[in-house]
Length: 190
Image (tube, rainbow, N blue to C red; front, side, top):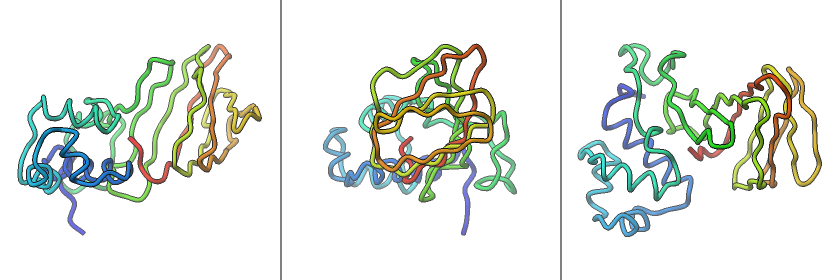
């Protein structure tokens, strides 16, 4: 299997394809939402055409991801591309509006799952429950975190793990220290 450099158009295209498919969108669905041709979108996904910044903003909005998530921040050496993600090269994903900072640990979104590093800031919470068509496993590395799954609240300590299979969930960190968790999510949603 050949892997492209993280900042190559092919890698961007592969990530866009994975995001589109994880949302059960066809090329036609997304191209219609973007007001672009199916051929153009197919070329972007195959790394033949490069989208403009404006195109990336529209694509990100249609896929429900941040534009910054689509950009790589540091190119990996050729022998590490597709295999290793260095700490300083992680891509930010999601939003920190609710006090959550997330970074993609996976080299890209082309696998059947993604691995995410999540930092829950002290005294933060997500107000409304979230439900998505995924299977997720989380492992709390440090801090403490309250997670509510289907209305049942659980207090997690370092070393604890949990599973969510499409159920509605929400989290809270009412404590004075950040909580750090590693999530494995299938299929990729970011």
